[in-house]
Every structure is written in structure tokens, then in C-alpha cells.
Amino acid sequence: MSERMHNFSAGPCTLPLSVLEEAQAEFVDYQGAGMSLIEMSHRGKQFVAVHEEAVELVRSVYGVPRDFDVLFLQGGATLQFAMVPMNLLGEGRKGGYVNSGSWGKGAITDAQPYGEIYTAWDGAECNYTRMPESGELEIQPGSRYLHITSNETIGGVRFRDWPQVEVPLVADMSSDYMSRPIPWESFDLVYGGVQKNLGPAGMAMVIVRKTAIEDNNRDIARYLRYDIHSDKGSMFNTPPVFPIYILGKVLKWMQGRGGIEAVAREAEAKADILYQAIDTSDGYYHCPVDVESRSVMNVVFRLPSEDLEKSFLTQAGEEKLLNLKGHRSVGGCRASIYNAMPREGVQALADFMATFRLAHPG
Ligand SMILES: *Cc1c(COP(=O)(O)O)cnc(C)c1O
Image 1 (cartoon, rainbow, N blue to C red):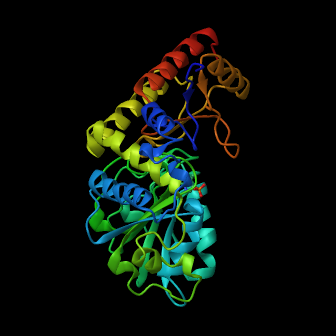
Image 2: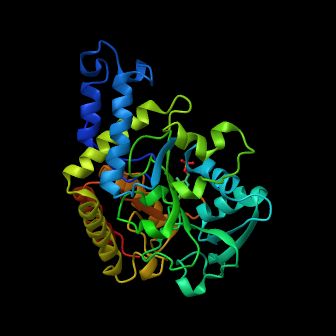
Image 3: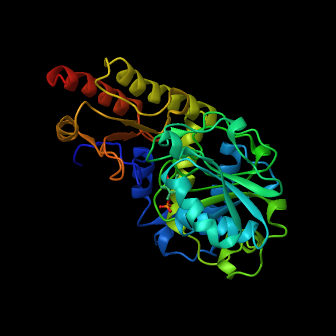
């Protein structure tokens, strides 16, 4: 095999090598069945076992309470932007939204047709460089939920502390899913595409409080109804079998690393390495995000000029440090360091940042 790169892609992104190798080893002939897992009926006993194990692993690794359902759905996080209000709102029902950047804005846009949508806090005034304090949130009486984006993947901004509010939280957790424990009592629903922290592209994982969907809207297509997916144990139609299978392996890998608390500590340690590299560079590298809101998953930074940024990206590539270009909408650089990014990869980037700065004074 060619040498493995340090892949800082924002998603799809790096996965644990051991998981890839395990999947490779059993890909063609799954446990002596004479066929691949992706060739089997999703209702056969082998896949059903894989599916059930994945759900149980999500529950045990993430500490999901029994009164929540774990659903594996298609359409990515993007479809959830619409499914959440379609199910939980409806005429005359209100949903509050935090506009914390590109993804928060996407959620607001897609919710508009399905209820009374309002912005409880708008990050536009600070150019999306921080998350709000609880006291800044303007929650209207009668709101069904407050929707937040726990980590803005493009802006590199995250909620370090969860909002303390009177209404249930609904959260798009795509880019920091299962990177830290969460206070389940505050949430009615969390969702995210799994292709950042947890597996390959092609699936969203929705974890929803059962009582929150007891009276969800039934006046929509069956696939869009949480209650149906819940009743059918996420087997209403053919589920995304390959992502579910890999998700199970990633979760076992997480268990082997010491579970979610250990993964969270490692994430903080990795992010510290990069923020240190930025903060000790005498302003050569600059992170536009407020210290309190700095993302632990997507570290964004600028160099003194766009020309230097270009050289930085090119030379980083020569050192096997790939996909460090910031999102096209904001420019600059971004290192996505999800759960599966090894600490050595992060250290290699920090070392390269120091070397580059000395070789190219601003
Ligand atoms: C990647 C991402 C999305 C979009 O996810 P898809 O699965 O591609 O629909 C939504 N929200 C956040 C925060 C993301 O990082």
C-alpha cells in the first residue's frame, strides 16, 4: 500500500485504519457466508445482528437513555433540517433557531415552510466568531424547541457549554457527534451525518426522545415520519447497510480507546496542540474565533497573506498533510481533527506550522 496521508478533510474524512482493514478483510466473504455483507438481505439474521449491535453500541458508548430511539436514516443531516420541523412543528407551532453560521443558516432556511420559525440569536453581528451565552438567547413563549448547531464546521465555532433554557434543545451535531458526553435531559432530538466522526457518508443518525414524537405530524410521506421509523426499529425500508456496518466498527474502536470520556479528552488535547501553535506564533497564524468558542474539531486559521496561505497549503501537501484548505466560502486554512485523526497527525501539522513560519517570515 502507498503511504497513508494525514487527512484533515472536513468530511468525508479520515477513519480509523484498523476499521478499514477489518472491513477489507471480511468484505468479500462475511463470516463464512460466501457473500459480502452488502449483498445480503437487510432482514436476514446476519445483517439484523449487525444493525442491532450498532444501535446497542450507540446507546452504551454515548450513554443514550432508554426513553430515546436511535434511528439510522438517509438524506444526511440536510434532510433533517426539514424533517425536524416537519415532524415537530406544523401550523401555529413555533421553533427557535440559533444562527451560528453556514449550517445554522441552512437549518433555518429549510425549516421556514413548516412552522413559525424565528431566530433566537444571530451571529451575523459578530461575523459568526462566537456562540451565544444562554442569557443572550431570545426564546419566545410557546416555542416547541431551540435548534442549535453544536459545532459550526466551516466557521470553527462550537458551543463549549450547552445553552441553559426552558425549552428542549434540538441539535445538529454532525461535526462533533459523539466527541463528548452530552446532558440528555436537555435534549429532545440530536442528529447528524455520520461521515465526520463516525463512519462513511450516506447516513444520518437521529436520536430522539420517544415522547417528543408521540404526537408528531402524520400528514407527510411515510419516510419522513419519525414515528414510523421508530415503530419499525429503523427498518421501515432498506437501511443504509454499509454505513451501519462501519459505524458499528468505529464505535467498537471508540470503546477500545476508553469510551466517550477518553475520546473527549483526546479531542481537547489534539485541539490544544494546534491552538498552541497558533497562539505562540506572534500573530503569524491567526484564529478569528473567540477563545471560548473555538472548535475542538475544526481548527480554522489564517496566515499573514493569501499568497502565504497558498504556499502553506502546497508545501503542507508535500509533507503528506492534506485537505487543509478552508471552506471556499471563507478561505484561509482549516484542520479538521475528528475522533479518528491520530495525535501524531496533529503534531505533524503543528511541527510543520512552526517550520513554515521560520522559512517564510510575514
Ligand atoms: C456536514 C454538515 C452538514 C451536512 O451534512 P450532510 O450529511 O452532507 O447533509 C450539516 N450540518 C453540519 C454541522 C455539518 O458539518
